[in-house]
Amino acid sequence: MTYTAPQIRRMIDALPRQRLIFSPTPLHRLNNLSADWGRDIYLKREDMSGPSPLSGNKMRKLEFVLGEAVHRGIKTVVTYGAYQSNSAMQVAAAANICGLKAILYLGDTKGEGKPEEPIGNLLLDTLLGAQIEYVPQHPQATATNLTPMWDHMIALCKQKVEALNAAGEPAAFLPLGAAHPWGYVSDVLNYLEITEQSAAMGFKPDYIFHANSSGGTLPGLIAAQLLLGEKDTQIISINIRSWAEGNVVTRQTCIERVRAIFERLNLLLPTDEAIVARMHIDENYMAPGYALPNPVAQETIALVLKREGVFLDPTYTGKGFSGLRDYVQKGRLPEGSRAVYIHSGGLMGLLAGGQMLEGII
Image 1 (cartoon, rainbow, N blue to C red):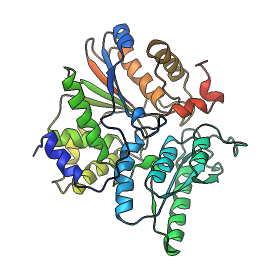
Image 2: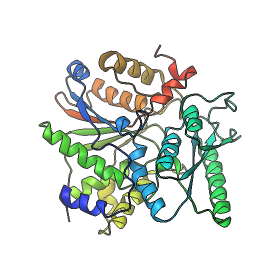
Image 3: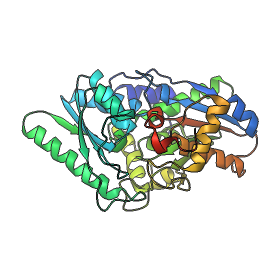
C-alpha cells in the first residue's frame, strides 16, 4: 500500500517531537557548477537547519530522538564520536534546548593525543557546557578499521547509562551519529521536502546523493520511497565509512532500520528485496580512512568554494560531493540529469585546522 505525502505527515506528527529546526531547509541550484558540468546540481541545505548557524542534519533526527527522551522522562543523554564529531556537538546543543544533560565520549581516532586546548567542534562542545570524557586511541584500531574503537566507546557509554539509571537519574544512550530508532523517521520528512520543493521548482530529481556513514539518513530516504511508491529517483550513498560485515553499521543494519520505521508507524513491513532494490552503496571514496582528508575531496572542497562559495567539510560532505563530481566526470550521471546533494553540515571540520586544510589553502 502506498500513501500520499499528507497521509505520511499525519502519521509522523503523532510521534513525540521537540521542534528544533527551521524546516523545510532550503533547496537551491548550484548555477555555476551546473553550467560547468551540463547537469542540474542542487543542494539540500541541512547545514542550515538551525537553531544555530553551525547546525546540520543530525538536528532533524534529534527532534524525534530527544522528543521521545523527554516524553519518557529521560534527564541525561550519552553519546560518542571522534574528537571533532559534528553529531556530538549537535547532541549537546539540542540537549540544552530540551533541558537535558549531555555526556560526550570523544575518542582519539587519529592517534593525536588529548588536545592541549579545544578547537573546532571540541570548542563548541565546551562552550555548550557538555560533559566531555576523552577516550584514548584503541590499540587495535586503524585508520581503515575503527570498529575496535567504536565498540570500546559503546561499552563505556552503556556502562555510564547503567550507572546513571541505577543512581536514579534516567539516562539514554544515543548511538553514533544520533542514529537511534526513535529518529530514523525524520528523513522521511527530508525526502518529502525534497520532492515538494523540487516540484515547486519545476523538476523531479533523477538522483539524490548523500555522504553515508553511521546510517541514520538512508533508512528514512528509502522508507519514504517505499511509502510513496517512488522508484524514479535513485538514491546514491557515498560511503565515508565501510559497511562491510563486521562493522558497526552494515547493509543489513540499514534493512533493519527501514523496517523499524514501518514498525514505528504501525505499518505492514516491506520485504528485504524491496529495500535492497533502493540501496546503492558506493565505497570508492573512503580513502585514506575516517576523518582523514582525501586529496581529491580536498580539491573538490576548493572547487565548490571557488565556483559556488559553499563550504564542505573534509570528513563527510567533501568526500560525498567528490563522489558526485566523479560520477559526472565518468559519465555515470547522463548529461541533462538532475541531482540533489544533501549537504549535512560539518563546517567546523574545516575550522579544526591542521591536515584538514591540506589541499584547500
